[in-house]
Length: 117
Image 1: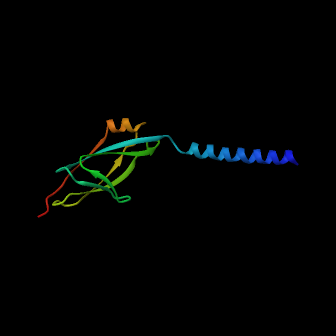
Image 2 (image 1 turned 60 degrees about the horizontal axis):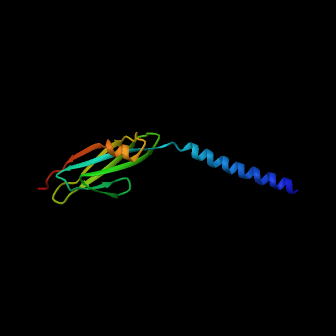
Image 3 (image 1 turned 180 degrees about the horizontal axis):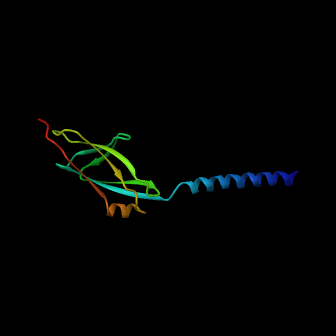
């Protein structure tokens, strides 16, 4: 009886470890992409419209994390007092193996803000 219980426990542990290995194997390697936000004039607030997070003020460098180099579609809004709001959308190419590599080659996103009348 004791041997059977140990075998059942060992089998359960092996199944659990196998499940973890399978789940870890499904997630591809992390990849990164960077965007350099530029507004004319500078000093615009950049908001990610996916989750309404404040990313920072222009000029701004933001790094996105992806898996297996899959691109990510991003929509942002730029706001600056005295100027019209601008919304822009683009694909972030997450092809870099490290954050540092991505930061060294950011995709430029430039927005011309129009003065309010």
